[in-house]
Image 1 (cartoon, helix red, strand yellow):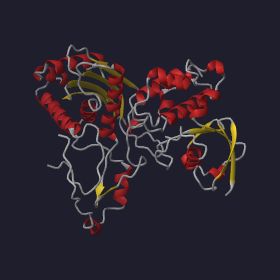
Image 2 (cartoon, each protein chain N blue to C red):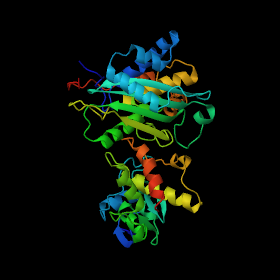
Image 3 (tube, helix red, strand yellow):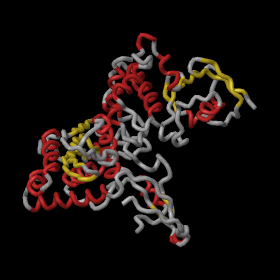
Image 4 (tube, each protein chain N blue to C red):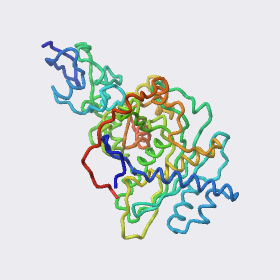
Length: 164
Length: 258
């Protein structure tokens, strides 16, 4: 079987998987990184949202063979290391994860890793553009939450953004 | 007694049929108030005999600024619900102006936007007020979905909707930028329910607000002429030859929840 090499949460990994297997299954079944959740497999629900080279993407829609050896994939498991230690909170987590805990956002929790990864990517985007986050920015988030936690998600993103 | 046609698989429905019943009732209550030339809140306070319901109505009306001036094409709606040993009342504000309704987001249902929701609940003895608030926030998003975006269409024995790409639950671009939940104090020893208690009054308040903003009496929801599934169906109408091939009735009979 072909070998696939990429950087996963700061460490180089090599897996033996066919090129056309979606990255979500590779992450979950080979190294056992299960933060990215399976929701729809058609890139609609966004439950699997992770980062590739710092931008949000959906591994359910990306064949593993499309990755280059230098590509950096970050899942919720690797998110705290994306900020310097001084920016991590009392639980040692990324400021957005700490904001999520402080606001008591999750209900069932299934979509929440993807929500947090989408939130961090969105805040980083507005920071690159030299802006603070607005309601219009929050309206662009496509991640579905069937519990309807959208209200606290919006509040937590505003909180987390101030500490990123 | 069976609630549904069991020739197809069924799933869970938050608050089951209560939202539908509340919408019908509250739209008619608003019509009665209008015929008597009374404000919807004043009408409900005058004729509602349950003291707990009058209390949540007064609370939500004050916190939600009931009666404040609204621009043409926008309106407030108010509704109540009593279930699960608790009572609740909801004030919403909706925007049905063309610039909002016709806003374009790829592969999304937009339409009218609920811009603000104020919700008061008396759930009796409250053990976890933050948890109760969270359940109301979730129920609010379900109520908005029922009014404006989400539905299932059964055709020829199967559903047109298959996944999140064509079953339109509330998304960030549909959810209200402002939501305020008020947990009423209670000296009751009895705890009430929370999980489904936020849906019915919200759906009804959105329906009443939509009726007032558009000057119409809606009779079906979601009121979405641009619904992509129905648009697709208009292009590919149901085939009457297929209609006779519905799956046979399943013999299993389950007790209903009630």
